[in-house]
Length: 79
Image (cartoon, rainbow, N blue to C red):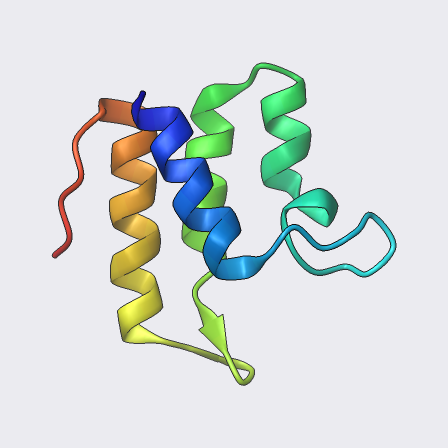
């Protein structure tokens, strides 16, 4: 359930996108790792999506860390 919840929250926030748009889930390495069933690397990919207006955003960093933790450990911890 944690993996599903993390992916729903992530996709709602960044969008589905398209393979060609270079934006959203469909163009992400996260989806590639999921398709390869490499869940450890998939969990780490959440953390790379913390940029807003070409700079690291503290709120997005916290959100992505929480999503990664939810995906990996089935626990949502927003810190």
